[in-house]
Structure formats: structure tokens, C-alpha cells
Image 1: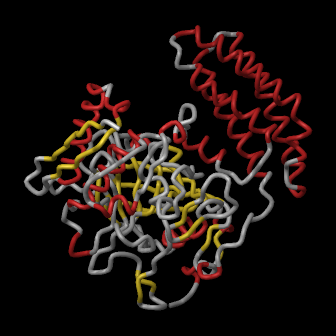
Image 2 (image 1 turned 90 degrees about the horizontal axis):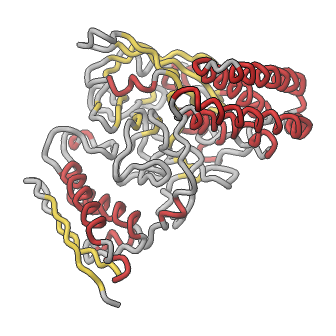
Length: 455
């Protein structure tokens, strides 16, 4: 088979990379488009390999003596191989051979992207609940579609909104009994009340559309989706699976919790204090979310500075001193947690291995890096089970981190989303101070809390 040989190099003083990429003749035809993408990859590789003190776009906890160093050539090559693999689905690298061992094949882009990606954090949390009720999803979907309808300028958007409202009303009327049947027995009455509120709210929204009051649509939409989310949470009856025995004595969040993180912002006359509301998802990451909530209740993060803010991520959680994480006073050792990934369609998370290492290249994670402010654990590059206390929030998309085709998915443990004031994450700088993290609700879902144990 004829092949075209493309070479990509980074001119960083710290890194010089030349990776021959062999493409089949069919893939070589749209050369201009591919070469433009290669140029973007080269620029991204320059960022990865740059000797600049700015941290790399891919969050990693490095050993203490390496924390100020940039990505290695090996990291750059692997990251580039991933990007090329996502584009071509048939990577063939002459070197390093290790890359072929780690990623023998990557999924076709069509598998990764099936329709527009969901980027709203609250919607992601709704779809991540461990429920299987088609009727409630058929009610939820047209309400969420109102967001796209409102992208049309002026009052013309209201025609599409009206169709969304009629579709949602029809879904509620036809599926009400099925929805209620899915609610946990102990929460039936609450479920009935919520469905009545949704019905009344849909009538209100129809009136808003008829009055051509565009500005009132979004607030009512969000109110209705809050009710829908509450019904869906009422469908979860207890915790749906057993955490593996080796992790069962760790702090575990068996459900969800909401926290408010207050940050003191320095050197910004327009913004001095900001409170970020975060939902922690223990249904899909009980060990990871439980670890963070336990540390928050210990006030571990209070007074800690933001340690990285480079436009790609905001990161914090590295304590002062030689320790690279939380040292449990009861043991005198750093507490670490395993990599924890819940895959769509699975009944429990996988632990200790990335999805690539498991050969699950087409798997979709239940908590993807789709939303601005996706919250995840940082860890050592070559140790999946080294996460302790350092967390990061993803801020922006790039060639390597597009929604629904994100190279971070399946490699880092997502355990929550910022659902209020997430846009202000972009204003945080190194040196801004996390004043406090306060639990709003859900503390009763934390099992085995270590903060109650006297060390």
C-alpha cells in the first residue's frame, strides 16, 4: 500500500521531536487539511516540551524534586502519538516502540463523537446517575434542548422553544406513570409532588412563550431541570454496588455531596472573593470523591494557594513541605487513592488501570472532561495509584482535549463538576487563596470519615 511520510518536529531548546507518520494513500489525499492539523500538533508539542516554567497542559503530579520541570521527550512523543491516533485511527510510529505497546490502536473518531457533546455540568450529572428510566429521559431531553433553541437571535427562538415545551409536556403526560414507577418506594410522595411542580412549570413556560418573554425562558427552564434532576435522584435506591474490599475502609462518598469553595482573589479590583459551588459524584467515583470530601472536612485545603493557573487547568492541593499529599496523622504516611474510572454501561468503576491499559479504547466514561470546570485528581505520570490531595479543574478545549474525544478521559479520575460561577475559574491566578471549603449537603453520604478519628 502506498504511503506518505510526514515529519513533525518541535524546535524547543529542550525538546527536538521528529516522528515519521505513515499514512495510507487514501488518508494522504486531503494533504492541506492534514498538514494544517500537523502544524497545530507541532505547536502543541512545543507547549508540552517547552523549557518555559509554565506547567504543561496535561495535569500531572510529579515527584517533589521534579515539580518545576517541564514534560519529558517521552511524554511529548506519547501525547503527540495520542493526538495523531485520534485523527487517523491508524497510528504507525517508527519510534519510540514503547508508544506502540501502550496504544496499539485508538478508536475511530466516529465512535468517540456520536452527536453534539454535552458540556453543561448539571446535564452531565443528570445523565451520570445510576438509573434506567426512559420516560424521565424523554422529559429531560426537550427541556435541555431549549438551550440550543435560545441560540437563535431575537424572539424567533421562541418558536423552537415552544416546540420543545410541547414535546416535554407530551412526554410528561404519556410517561408520568412510568416515571413514578421508577421512583424509590420511600420517595414516592416526594416524586408525586415534583411531577406536579414540573407540570405546573411547563404551563408557566408555555405562557412565557406566548407572551414572547424571551428573557424569562432560561430561568424557568433551569427551574424545571432542577425538578427533573431531583426526580431522577429519587430513583436511586441506596448505593448501587460494593466498593472493592481493598478500598472499602477508605473514606467513601456513597451518593452525592455539594460543597462551596470560597477563594480570595488577589490583584483583581473587579473580583475579590468568589464562591464556587461544586457537586461531588460518589455514585461514579466513591473513593475519589470521598477522599476529597474527607480532606475538606479536615480543613486540609483552607488557606492553601492556587498553585497552577495556566489557561488549561487550575490546580491546587500540594501542601507545604516535602510531602506531596495528605499525610494521615494516624499512620504518619501519605494517603493515596487508586485511579477510579466509571465506564458507561458498567455497574461499578474500574480501579488502578487506565482504559488504554485495559484495552477499552472505545469506552465512554460516565464523568467525561466535557464541561468547563470538570474536577479531577492529579497524579504521578507513571503511577496510576499515586493521587492524594492535588486536584485540578479543566478550563478549555484544545486539539488534544476536545469534548467527547478527550485524551484525559480514562486516564484521570473525574469526581465532580463546578456548577455555579465556573466561568470565574479562568480569573484565578497562582497565589490566590482557598479560604474555605464548606459542605452544603450530602455529608451524611460520607462513609468511614477519617476526620472523626483522633490520630
